[in-house]
Each structure stands twice: as structure tokens, then as C-alpha cells.
Image 1 (tube, rainbow, N blue to C red):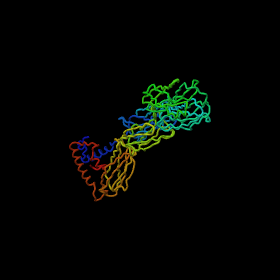
Image 2: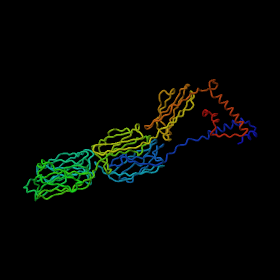
Image 3: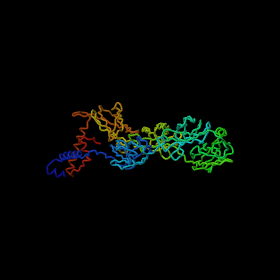
Image 4: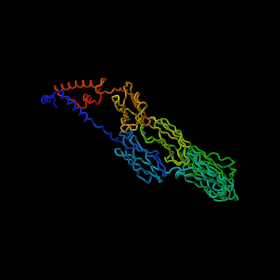
Length: 606
């Protein structure tokens, strides 16, 4: 609209027109102010982590699945609002999940309980959420040492035929379902019982020591009988051996050698055992005494197995009809045939396999896969006992593990509870650094190490202090953000010299906003306001901002005031505006009208 045309046609004074236009423009400025937009939920993808990654099929519930939110830039993000995640298990007969979980505001992930069955198997776990790409992960549940086979006790009682009063040998070895030696991660107490306790004397228990796979003891026959010997350890498949006790009969001359394996196999790791038992028989296959000399024992492949010296003569004198020979394995898995012979006697041979030993080892896992420094839910470290094939190892006596940590505060020792294969630790967020390294060690098992980075979202705090008028209520605001996103539930500590007696604590809302309402009561030139913020172990603060409190102004007050200055300034502006309108027309943009805002008193002129 051309103001010069209106002024001439209507006869209106340019100053009046300018006032009218200023009021209209000011009104337009207020009307045009956009409402504060709500931040939409960030779009990205879901990620799934299993910790521990291997679960025993024991019917228990494990909080082992972690669902995390990731942004489009492949970094974890905090959710500004609750995110519903719907879960599915492809085979409920193996594992079951809840129908849905919620990632709460201010967190990037949530832990999910997994209910496993007693049936080992493989299942895929699927997570779906609106606005995020789906995720799935494979879970395999297995039988574990300490829950049910495939681990078992292999028992040998030798020689198979003995006389009353003649000591026999008994070995109890820990093997898997294929007969491969398994090194015990902790002492295993084995209980021994016989089918006829009056026929033989048998130790009540033997112990397979940690880091070993076999225990060897003696038993004493008392009278003629056929007896079975049962070896049992808690939750491990038992083993049985049979022996025959015969009365001494008339013996002939030794003419036959028999060879037996006292242990079913050897670990290929440079280990020596008294593992070969030789027995002398006459032509009627009756055990007979034989001299301990003039017997040779050889290995078909010394690269796999080497025969060592026989037992000392004292043992030969005590046992009379049998002798034990030692063999030493090398670090080369394979099989060797051990052959025994003597002058005038039929030789004997037996095959001894050696295997790469199965050792229990520790596993360290961190969940979720990428922890976020500002997560409300603590990240976790899982310490688990597994075998070389990844199967969980459970010992009902528990297991103590030593933890070494750098960049995170964790206990120096933890105990895996009895009946479980793992223990879960929470990271102390107040002590977590960007780089974290961990190591775990325990007697009789292979150790583990772990290194990872924590996504540290540094806090930023913006402080807004308005013009303060004595006796007038005002709002001081602090906005807390991390990487440009508002941080809810951050702790803000307000401090102000001359305004607050004690520091004041409050939490930010969902928009990362904390508001301090103040009413200055007197003029002060030393007033300062500072906001200190902490969240999930991270800190941020503002520089102390000075503010001046102006005295209140009343009508008729002779004191200092902005009123006369603003009136004079407004009058000059109106005259200039009228002159400009009269000469060249008025063109003022509402969004840039500092003049109008000064008239309305929304903010002081800068």
C-alpha cells in the first residue's frame, strides 16, 4: 500500500499513518511468531546383542538380549520419547521372548529376558519398531558341562582279573561324548560306589584336579566276586567299570602278555601318564607272576607318543601279575600303537589316541555392543565359562575369576555362581573413560581380554539470563544438550553470588530445559549466575554470567528510568518514519522490526 497516496487522498497526517502502521507491523510480528515445533523421534535402525552369546538349555530365564537404537550415521542414539519394540522368537520350543519392550526416554537400549527350554537348538530372535529398520540375531542353546551330557566320566578298573588282596588300579577321566579329554576348570569331586561293598575296598571319593582330566587311585579286592564300580559327579554323566575277583589257582608258566589302557586317551600337550597296564597270563589265560625284567615296550610313532620308564620294581613286587608303563604325549595329535613283548611270551598291543585338548576358557562380553556414555541404563560386562566349541560350562561349586580393568571401575574378583556359567557386572558410569580394557583370569582355565570404546556425548549447557528488575519475577533458563540433542533428567546445580544462599538442584525436562525462577530484591552490580550439569558420569558447566539488577520504575518516579529516553526515541522515529512514508513509501519487514519490539517492550534494545 502506498502511504503517500493514502495521505493525500484521506488527508491524514504522515505521523498518524506511521503510528498506525507501526502498531499493525508490531501486531504482525506477534502473530507471525511460529509455535515451537516438537522434535520428531529420530529414525534409524535397531541392533541386537546377546551377552552371554551362548546359553545352556536348562529351562532358566536369562536377561541376555539387548536391543539398542542406532541413528542413520551408524552410531547409537538416545530416544527423546518411549520407543516400543516388538519381539519374536522363530522357535518358541527353544527360546521365548516377551511380546514387546520399551526403550525409555534418555536411553539408547534395553535388556530383554530370554526364557530357554530344556531342548537344545537354534532360534532367530527378531526385533521390530516403528521408524527403525528391523534387526535379528541367532541364538543357539546347548547342553553344558554341569547340566547334562555330552560330558561324561570314563572309568577303567585294571587289570580286569585280580586275586583277593591284590591291589588294582582305577582311573576316572573327564571326557566329552567323543572320548576327548576335557581339562577340568575347577576341582571335580567324584563319588565312588561298588555293587558289592563287602567284596572290595574302595575309596569314597577321588578328585580330578583343576587343569587336569583324570584321577587315579587303588582298590583292594577282598573275596571272589564280579563287581561293578560306579563313578558319579554332580550333574555329569556317570561312568561304570567291571572287575572280576578270582581265587588263586594253580599257575603255569607265563606265556601271554595282555596290554590295557588305564586312561582312554591322552591330551596332545607334552603330558606323561602311567597309562599302559601289562598283565602276564599262562596258556589257560590265568594271571601269573612274572619277572619285571626282560620286557620291552615300544611306540609305533614316537612323533605322537613316547614310551617312558616302567614303574619301579617295588610296584611290580606288590602287584605280582601286572606292571604299568608310562607314556608321554607330544604336541602333535594322532594315534600310536604301543606294543609289549618278552622272550618266550606272545606279545600284545594297544592303540592310544591323542587329541588337541579341550580346555575351558573365559569369555568377556560387553553389552550393548556400543555403550553410550549418557545412557540411563548402565552398560554391562558378562564373564562366562565356555569350552572351545562355545558351549557354556557350569560348575555347581561356582568359580572365582580375577578381573583387571583400565578405564572402568570393576571389582577385582567376582564369582560365577554355583549352577551358572556366567556373571554380569555393571559398569560404574562415574568412572568410565572413553577407552576401556579388561582382562579376566582364573586357575585351570584360559583367560580372556576385551577392549572397547564408549561413545561419549559431551554435555553442552546454554544459559539465558533476562534483564533483571528489582522486585520483579524473572526466569533464568539452562538448556542441556549432547551432540545437539536435548538431554532429559540431567542434574543442574544453580549457583549465584548475591542471589541464592545455597546451590539449588533440579532436573531437566524432556526438552533438556531447567528453569530457575528468581525475584531480585535489591540492586547489585556483583550478581552472577552459573549452572553446573552432570549426567551419567559426564559433566558440563557454564561460565559464570554477570547480570545487573535495575531498580523498579513507578509512574512519577524521579529516579533513573528508561521511560523518557524511550518516549523521545519513539517520537524521533515516528517523525522519521512519517517523513520517509511521505517521500518514498514505507517498507518495513515484521521479522526485523527492532523498532516495533522496542515499542512493545519485549526485549531491551541491543
